[in-house]
View (cartoon, protein in one colour):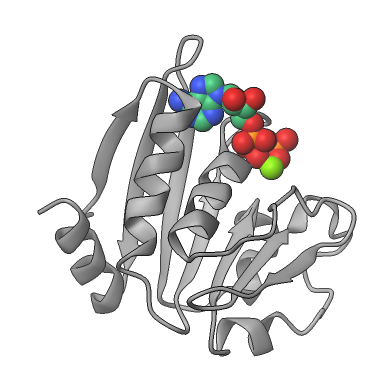
Length: 151
Ligand SMILES: Nc1ncnc2c1ncn2[C@@H]1O[C@H](COP(=O)(O)OP(=O)(O)OP(=O)(O)O)[C@@H](O)[C@H]1O
Ligand SMILES: [Mg+2]
């Protein structure tokens, strides 16, 4: 399987990589974020938000599941860590098919409900402030996107 990797040495570096990635995003793009507690999923999302010119502070939406932000494109930030039942239908499709970019922290918990084409980003906690970021594109749109980012 095609995958793309980058190592970061600080939260700022992860933030900046996400900010860069945001430049390539289009309406309807869906990103799954996977990684342990504190791996950097929310840090990554904050970088995306900056890249999408969102002025509001993006926080972890742990208790709300979905938060919406307005920017160059709308950002739908989901954290499904506390979704009780993976089949619980909270209307995710409307976001995935909407005019914005959707980012889902802990996406595998709602695996059955995710779109077929998706960009999965794994964040691996290496020692201290080091993280390995692995992008796994599923579908042509995201393969193209990864190629552009890593060009
Ligand atoms: N290279 C790095 N990339 C990202 N975050 C880093 C890095 N180095 C250190 N950190 C720190 O790790 C923490 C990551 O927290 P963050 O909330 O982004 O993780 P998370 O994956 O969203 O966690 P949770 O599962 O609790 O939602 C922050 O305190 C950040 O400063
Ligand atoms: Mg988080």
